[in-house]
Amino acid sequence: MLDISNLHATVAGKPILNGVTLHVPAGEVHAIMGPNGSGKSTLAYVLSGRPGYEVTEGSANFDGQDLIALEPHERAAAGLFLGFQYPVEIPGISYLQFLRESRNSQRRSRGEPELSGGEFIKLAREQAALLGMDAEMLKRPVNVGFSGGEKKRAEMVQMGIMNPKFALLDETDSGLDIDALKAVGAGINRIMRAPDKGVLLITHYQRLLDYVEPDKVHVLRGGQIVRSGGPELALELEREGYAEAAA
Amino acid sequence: MTAPFPTHKQEDWRYADLGALKPVWEQFAEPITLTAGAGESLEEVWLPTADDVRLKRVRLALGPGAKARIFALNNAAVYGRVELDVSLAEGADFELFGANIGTGVSTNEFVTNVKHVGPNGRSRQTIRSVLGGKAVGSYLGKVEVARGAQQTDGEQSVKAMLLDRGATANCKPELEIYADDVKCAHGATVGELDPMQLFYAETRGLDPASARALLLEGFVMGLWDSAGDSDAICTAARDALRRIV
Image 1: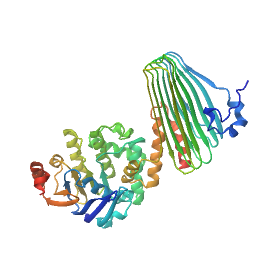
Image 2: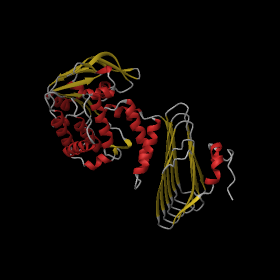
Image 3: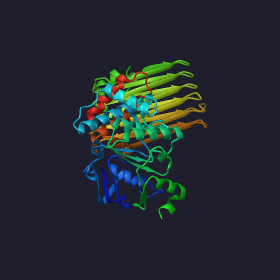
Image 4: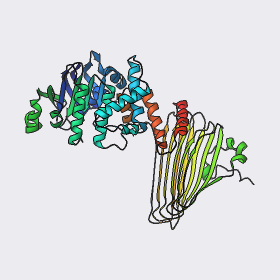
């Protein structure tokens, strides 16, 4: 599903990723853990095509397509979703309008019919309810005045509406209280746990992995995967810290 | 008796298209007076007319504790000017939300003079301009705080987005303060769309052109969020934006 091979990337001329190799097959959830500055967010941004994040070597293929050659919106249309660590505020545009236009734009790119206004509102209400978010919040401008936890829940509502094939979730668990963490974890399982889908979960801590059990855990350090293992590796990291466990 | 025709030497007319104004001056020269008495509230939505040249000159007097909220869209094809002369008595509250949307060789401007005469007044002026082609969009805004007008809280927020190299934004917030315990803030930016907002929208599947159009819409539409009945001004602003993006 997602095949990353010897990926090198720079930001403002500075090398951040130094040969990441990673394979996430369909049906699996992989977690990437690592200390601050190890390149976790850079990997998410490179895979989703943020301007200024330059691939200098290696490749990333998604369902056989060269991901790096695609524009960010083409990656979305291909089925990739990025859950932001810091979701962006867009004053003046309601969540409903933003998501309806985004989703319809994806559907147009794939040659699928657009959803009617009524169909879309029904879908948005359903997804908000499943994430424990008041549907009235979707009438407000995108993320404006949302608390940190509300923004992260809203990211998951977006994921539910977009129904992607692959989700890159960048510290979706940061800034969440216990209830929100449970709701977000359940949302990830419900939306993304399927034989034809995949997830790359970027996190600092083990706690989200109590709710979303990964098939594999990788440690990223100095822009490379330095260790891989099963779910038990996350527990080991939690116990011993990155310095010990990844030495 | 018509007011004398202005000249560019007058500060508040320096960016005006006087050539376009000259033939219609008599029709617009006399200001309209609006008042909100003690404790009263006033909300007005000023929609554009179909005229190529239009001038709206308003004197607004707010009594003690009165509230006024003005929403205005300025998008004349040749020259549009919204001029507001406001006086605030004690505890009065004034809010202006205005947009200049211009293209071609048009000139659109907001010119305001907000006088805090009594203490504890509050004024908020929020102006957004989206300018393409060789359009000019201006905001000349003066806030005067009289000697006794302590605890005045004034704010001017002015942002402009230039879509083409030939477009021009002028912004001149001005403060004249004679009281010593007041809060007056102003901020102005002229820029392009926020790259992080663009990227966020694109990761959700919007192509770059649609993402730009949506963000520009948000840049302007945020102005009308607090209007009681914003349908007409939203529609008019959206139409105006579609013509330039």
